[in-house]
Image 1: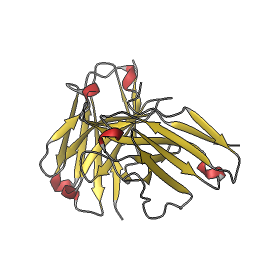
Image 2 (image 1 turned 30 degrees about the horizontal axis):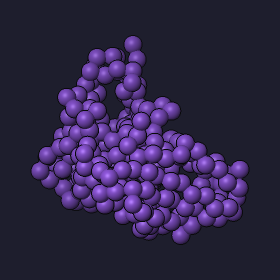
Image 3 (image 1 turned 135 degrees about the vertical axis):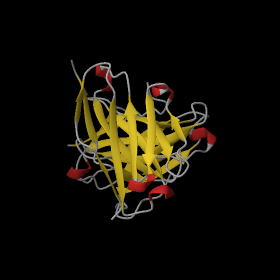
Image 4 (image 1 turned 90 degrees about the horizontal axis):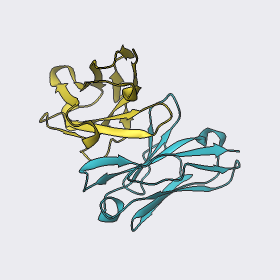
Length: 111
Length: 119
């Protein structure tokens, strides 16, 4: 059971918008620790999509955006494309565990 | 080009140890931490720990305390992760990743090293 809770799966048609939630607690997201989001295609290395809650690394399209509020965070993907089909993970730091923590991951299916 | 290149696949028997390497290039090795993350078949990403490549201090997930050791050799810009007392549950792809500090792995990842534990 992950410290950060994500829905197991989401889906959307090409061109649509989807959102993936990440729910934590007062010892991680609620304590003010940054949230980062990764995209993971099976067989490849995870790719950093969002760092520091809302910032995109260079090369990440602005179709990807994120927000954070209280003990939760959310990743939004607009204009869905076939190549967006992947697993998505939120990640933060937990002060009770003094540990990096990942969400359980969300499988995005592009219909 | 900043990159991390990991060692190849390993097959180990239960009870054995495995040591995975992660060689950095294209940046100053000691400016960043190295995190280790794994993904078991059908599972999500699991953080194992990090090593401060400058001081050699390491911090491990409670899930691996007592079984994992992270070291580095600055002369060859390489970090190592050794996991002992392997069981089938340790079968996974192990990744190293470069982080600015100890709270996040960051944007540069190795290609992954597959470790299979089987009798």
